[in-house]
Amino acid sequence: MENAALAAGPEERGPKRAAHPGPRPRPGQIVGLLGGSFDPAHDGHLHISREAMKRFGLDHIWWLVSPANPLKRHAPAPLERRMAHAARLAARDRRITVTDVEARMGTQMTWESVEALRRAYRGQRFVWLMGADNLAVLHLWAQWTRLMRTIPIGVLARPSESLAARLSPAARRFDHARLRQSQAGRLGRIAAPCWCLIDIPMVKDSSTALRAAGRWPQ
Image: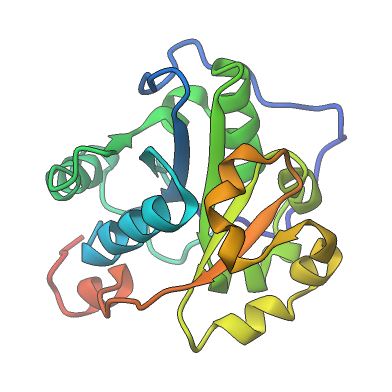
C-alpha cells in the first residue's frame, strides 16, 4: 500500500465499517499489519515479518494485499494472482496471514484502512509496520498525523536508511512518542502515538527488481 500527499478530507470523515472483516485473531494477540501491493511478495516480506514479530513482540502478522494503487506508474497484477502468490510464500510461517480485507472494506489510504480495522475489531491490539523509507516520506501521506495518533508504528530500517528516517519530519514531530530499540518489545502494549525504529539486516529481494528481471510477468 502506498500513500500520497492528497488533499485530506475533514477530520470527522471516516471510513465505513467493514461488513465482512478479515482474519480472526485470538484473544490477547498483538497483530502486526504489513500493507502493500505485494506485486509480487518475496523473501524480503517474509524476512521483515519475522524480524518484526521477534523484535516488537507480535503474535501474528497480516499481509494486507491492496487491491490497486492509482499512484503507481504500472498497474499491478490481478489481486487474485498476487493473493495466491503471497499465500504460498506465507505458508512457510503459520503466524502470517494473507488477506484482501482492504478490498472488502473499500479502503485505499493507510489511515482509512487502520481506522476501519479498529472499528471492525474493537479492543484488538494492532501495530502498523513500515520500512524506514516510508517513515522518511510519511509527512507526505494523507492524514499522517492522524495515523500516528491512531496506531503504534513499528519501523524496520536498513542500516543505510536509518539516519534519514530518524531525521525525517515525521520522526522529529513525534520524537516525544518514540521508544528506544531496547524497548521495542513493548510497542504493541502502549497507546498511540508511539513508534519505534529498529535496525535489521535486509535481504536483497524487491518487487521492483523481480519485475525488472522478468520473474513476475504482468
